[in-house]
Amino acid sequence: MSGRAVLLDVERLHVHFRLREGWGLGRRGVLRAVDGVTFAIAEGETLGLVGESGCGKSTLGRAVLRLVEVSAGKVRFAGTDITKMSERRLRPWRRYMQPIFQDPFGSLNPRRTVRDIVGEAMLVHRLVRSEEAMEARVGELLERVGLPGDAARRYPHEFSGGQRQRIAIARALALSPRLIVADEPLAALDVSIQTQIVNLLRALQREMGLSYLFIGHDLRMVEYVSDRVAVMYLGRFVELAAKRALFDRPLHPYTRALLAAVPVPDPGRGRTRIVLGGDVPNPVDPPSGCPFHPRCPEVLPACRKEKPELREVAPGHFAACLRVGPQAG
Image (spheres, helix red, strand yellow):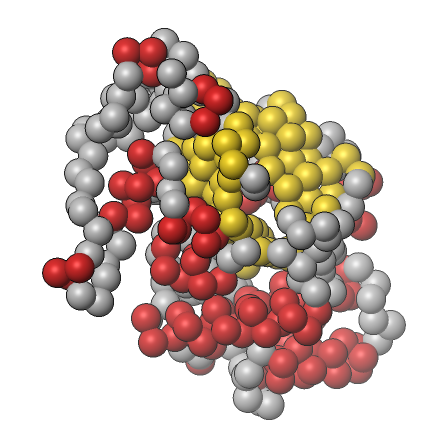
């Protein structure tokens, strides 16, 4: 992480949900949404997080923010363990960790003005002493994210999708956070707007020294915005590396399959397509051994029995595969 101070340190994080009968299982079960994930994010760094739908990306982001309860493991923010903090003790920390949600249509209260949406948290955390001070700060934030001067008096339905996401970004900035968890913030936007929002996030990072956990499914955008990238499959990290190393030299078969599916400008010179068989296994009843082995085109007999750990196989490059690094052979 280039010697920068660690802001977020996540150690062997588990988030499991106990399911009752009637969830299509015919019995009780435990859904392993996040299953032993370890990573860190430095000051001013962006960690991109990619993987198929249902792999646990959003749950991991919510666990970091303590919006869902952690089953096991630790979340340390700025050196302080916040994993088991009570809501009362956690409250002062929440201002430093803010979310940007995927759906700008559903994440903004349609009955409240933009002024109230962006400014409410400032009053709750007592960062301003008067309504007038709050309104002035809201105006500054809206201008900073590129919204018109009269935006504060209007309601969310009066804005386009891209403008609504700018409102959501202004709300996240209102408490002067240090970490933002952006959970697929581009997914509901037109392609023409996505680059504008990504460039805005990058500019804000440079100006404010923000750190991002950037969750996405568009690998081109994740590559553009990230310093490092983690690949998640069935609740676990299977690869983690600097973006250039991961995109140029992917080591895990699942990462290679994801990258092979990315469209390229000249199809005649594109990557060899890798077709994965079957579906993502049920996280309530995961396969033995490597969770990817039922779909892996390079599976070994040992993959059905041994669960590979995420290990450093090259400087700063981690992979969980029996074919790679010190586990190979």
